[in-house]
Length: 554
Ligand code: GLC
Ligand code: CA
Image 1: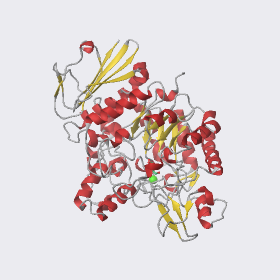
Image 2: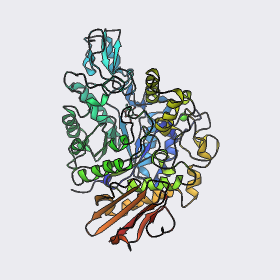
Image 3: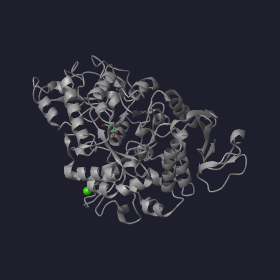
Image 4: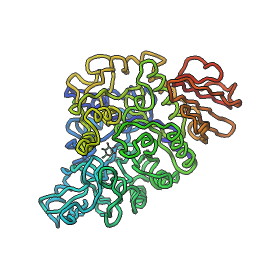
């Protein structure tokens, strides 16, 4: 198969609300992004995934879209978008737009029509059902807490919303809905954008008859029970045939609850569906066995290694992986698997970057990850904005599963808002993000962790990411090498090799604050070091705290 541009690329994700404000209203915007594009170019990324910038009432910060062909008022105008796109292209940066079409906003004209009467032509664009015995039509839960059904007075029926009640699910079984979506996608592609990141795309095909599912800890069947539904691949192939295949795009599906077998379809290298998918298994590896994500973290390195390794080997030569630690839905990786301690924060951030960027797939860097940004020290529920954190916190509190203090401690580890605090540009007021009052607080640690300081310092986390990204451009073994895990049971070391013909890499990462005894395998004893997060060589037989070292043999 001929190489695709996205196989050697690194994607930088921007969460526009928190990236750069240009007019002092405390909300990031398109002009702000345009003013910071050189920074992303300097890092070496090839493409930008832009979280949604469409018209939205912001019930879920833009993931609830009321007009797919217009720009969110707070973010600017379509002219601002065009200017950003043009400048990005002139810098050699491609723009990948978020496509949120599992659901729309309840304020989208389709839904306004749909809810207006039982026989409206748009009625069947969404899922309307009668109640059952005076209750919801089935036991499905919303990802944001409570039932996935909302009773609507106007027509006396319920509609389905796997997310908030302001995010009604679109009915992909209706061919007119697919026509409308494909037309809209084509409109953006004609404008010259370079791809789509497809929001919860694995959920678009609901099982026939919408049957009850096995209830989880909160009494509801989890929304992910609809993942990989009966027609999902058929619909994506149709989208590919009618739209995607006409352009040279990067497409990445957010595939909640995807299995490796399913991923072989979604991300097949034959190009019949998408370029790649985001799988969630490695993000779920530290979930509480009963309460899931919104509970204190359970770390288990052998499990994390097993999952990532399984994806590396199973997709090799068949489908394509995306590689990520951070995004706008995840707490910060340094706080999660690294160290917030000043002594080791940067070392651990570099170790985590090494571990991920030496794998096969397309790496994603989420804004601020390249600085080693950390979680926020939340102290009260009033500081939290995220609808998912609030919904789950309230549900647990009502069910008596957590005290208030436990709830806050849990959100400090797990809330999506940890990723959404403003980008830390400099040590000045509000970290250079805004001249006004930011919509979410700036992390007080911006006085030490910020881009301006790191750009000046050669051994910063920023420059380490820059080097990792440059290496991917140079070495085929990073792009295509076959993966093998060593030391699967080791509780603190993540060790693997990549091999391509006569060339190979040995990647050794210490996921702990303690030195570990480890002898570098004989074959690599004299191999040169490709990249490492300590300036000097470790004493023989030792891997230092949070150390990462990559040996290159050819
Ligand atoms: C995806 C998005 C998330 C959003 C949800 C509903 O998971 O990444 O931010 O809340 O879908 O659109
Ligand atoms: Ca603004």
